[in-house]
Length: 104
Image (cartoon, rainbow, N blue to C red; front, side, top):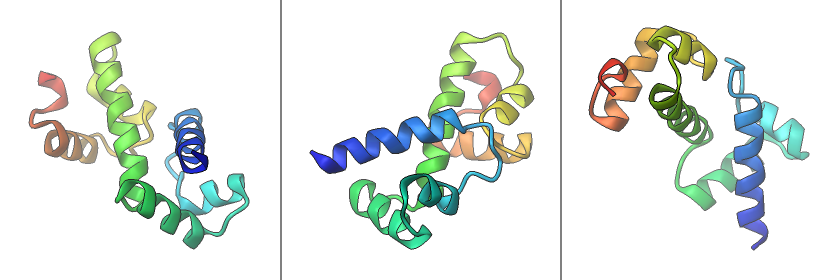
């Protein structure tokens, strides 16, 4: 139960800071009073993802929501969800969802 709360709190924190390009394990650790390595181990044990994979997954889920609901272009959504490069965003989005963001 405690772990579920932590994952929920982590997700809320990532979503609140989603547009920060520099969001990483160190920033999460600072927020939750843990070291970067403790954050990494905790996320890995609870989700089987590395910290960066976990953050990217949440960013991509939010981007998919924005693509469905908003009238923003792909570049605007990429920046709004914390990706520093629209081309990188498109590449990882296509890898996860099987289609380019513009076709989503």
